[in-house]
Length: 95
Image 1 (cartoon, rainbow, N blue to C red):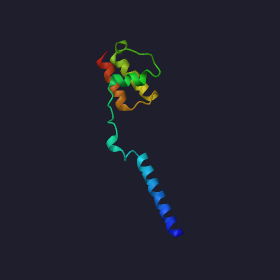
Image 2 (tube, helix red, strand yellow):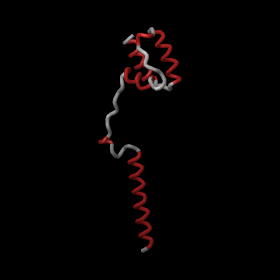
Image 3 (cartoon, one colour):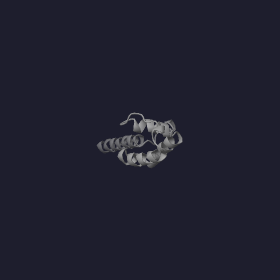
Image 4 (cartoon, rainbow, N blue to C red):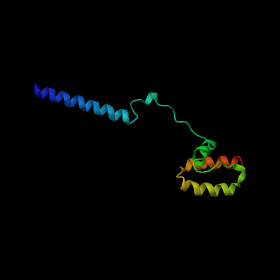
């Protein structure tokens, strides 16, 4: 009798751990997940650059200057390449 209770307890524990691990991995509620919103260059600029800098307008610099600045800041701010490209495109398009 004790053995069957022990086996049942271990089984219940294993099931509960499996449920916790599955829920923690983000797989269990996949239907309820919100779609990832794609941010454009203007939004990325506002989010990333304003953390440390006051707002700069695209017309304050030339395209070449913005390219140099973005290359430098991509490293300093640890920006993913795709985000840096979007920010640079926004700055050049609105220059």
